[in-house]
Image (cartoon, rainbow, N blue to C red):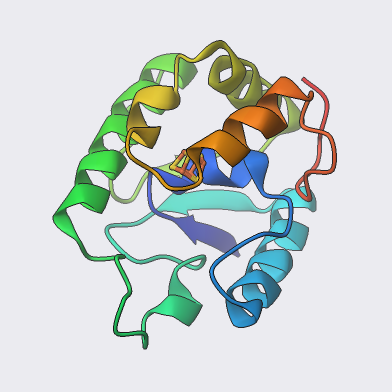
Amino acid sequence: MTVKLRPHHLLCFLTYVGKGYSPAFVENYDRIASRLTAGEDIAIVDGPDDICAPLLGSRNAHCTGASVRVRDAQAARDVGRLLGMTVTIGSRIANTPDMVRMLRSAFHEGTLRPACAGCEWSDLCTSIADHAYDNVRIAPAAI
Ligand code: SF4
């Protein structure tokens, strides 16, 4: 099995602390957090992914919006550069503790943050990274 993630969720999962758009969203995200912590690999998909799933019936869902696709493209570029691979639809990313630590370190340093521009959660994610990823739900927490 693989966890299906759109590219910008390679950043979002780094700072997941159990907050989200709705109880159903958080409940689903917690299940994905457990799978990622267990080391399931990641498959990159186009558009809505396993994290988005509970939002898709909502009138306000932004999952297919143009700005989110721009965010995906930026994240794919920056993560790919960091990991030394092409991150594109169909890519499979080995979910190792070292990979997650590398992403968290770069996220904290700001290298991966261009994709976060304009995101309503940005201050929260910055604060979590600034506090050494304390209380994140996807291990390994330390960087
Ligand atoms: S700021 Fe937004 S896009 Fe960036 S990691 Fe946080 S939730 Fe994801």
